[in-house]
Image 1 (spheres, helix red, strand yellow):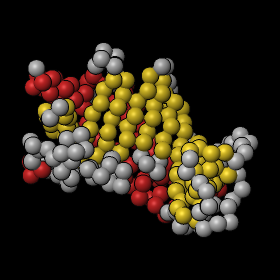
Image 2 (spheres, one colour; image 1 turned 180 degrees about the vertical axis):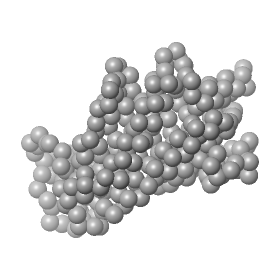
Image 3 (tube, rainbow, N blue to C red; image 1 turned 90 degrees about the vertical axis):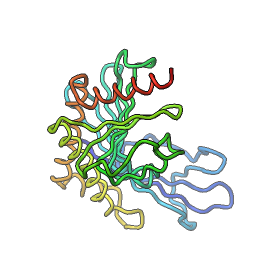
Image 4 (cartoon, helix red, strand yellow; image 1 turned 45 degrees about the horizontal axis):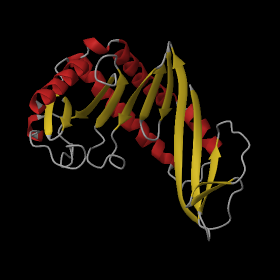
Length: 255
């Protein structure tokens, strides 16, 4: 597993804000350049006032036919194989305001599944989910009653044009693996919070600390291995069967 760390720092300037990047990734030689009207990338660290900073940790690896890239700071796992790809994205409060840390968005290639050969699904863990914007991020659910869920329930929700449906996973082993994956990814993010933007770790120090943390790497491997299992056995999973049922129910309501 190849680990890298990157710091994005933004500095005050009379004109466009200045963006300064520090990273452990191999880089091409670049010169100062604008990326938009309001931001200019510079290769020398500015001496003006620091406005904001973001720290990102990512990993890349290959397992079998899968080339895998992971944005560990944001919980996004990308799998590429042949000419196909899949995304498993954890739902964190600061990114997905309408959800909780107990969820995952799933997008993956599935030939013949839809008009664009793509499967989309949103999964949640337990009752502690903000459903006030569950309908495409702008309206509350009209059918989900959180009192119906136990804390270890895994449930899927879908909606389109005001129609919605949801189901709870019934397969115990699969449910437990989804639960462990969601919670493990949240633990990874929590551990990475020691590298908060105001902490004075260099990108090399961050990379070395992550590489030397065995439990961290074991946690990432667990998530990756389960996602590979899902991709290799997609049509036999409860996840796929219930996602298909939700899609079909919503289609029927639209007719």
